[in-house]
Length: 155
Image 1: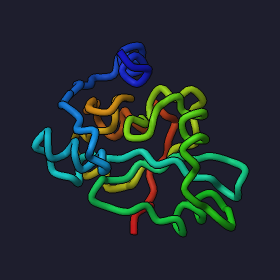
Image 2: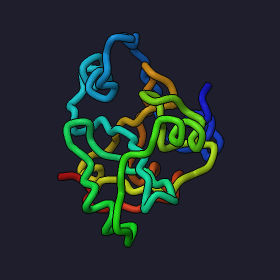
Image 3: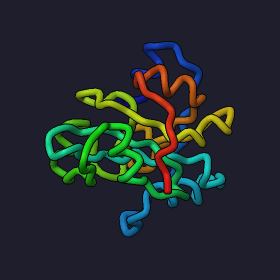
């Protein structure tokens, strides 16, 4: 089990784990998950880590069919500049490798913003902490587990 799944179990949150065979040649992990699990891309969310003013990391959870808006993330963070975090910063702070970064069970829980579109669904899918593994849970449970907030963060 991954830290993400362990957290959902420990907190007794209803969830389902879905697995698929990850293709190492695939670079769009979220799109691959949606395709292989036969899901609408709007229900599958990717976990993106950003660097806020070069001194703080923050997480944006957005549908794989959308792009994270750096401008909206900066506004939420009351920051001048937001940029994608480096691979080493992401892996060191979350404990996950790229393509398997989950908003759940991070080594150091980062401030998490979940795109408001998640509330359109009874359940959504996010990485369960490993490539080829997704966890399905309600958006409200995800919000509670990560102490997150909902906001419009896509462009």
